[in-house]
Length: 100
Image 1: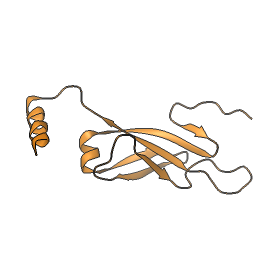
Image 2: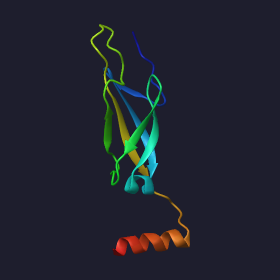
Image 3: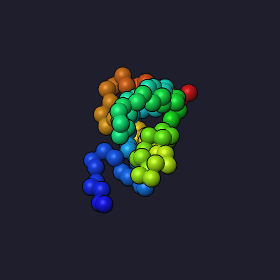
């Protein structure tokens, strides 16, 4: 059996991997994001101070074992999107943040 590549999911055995973009404020302050799984969507709590590249595991949300021995896991790699253009006010706020 050959499995075709998917635009959203990457597969490694019974585990699946996705990448999810969040904004800098969401990473710094924490948030709840909606994450697709192979069965549905789930709400994922992103902790305040989350760093780019953080991997979060959703236990049991991967591929079902064809032998009936459970399921793999789903891993979400958090990607923090940094804005390319800032307004003057946004720039001032970030500069003030950097000073403290």
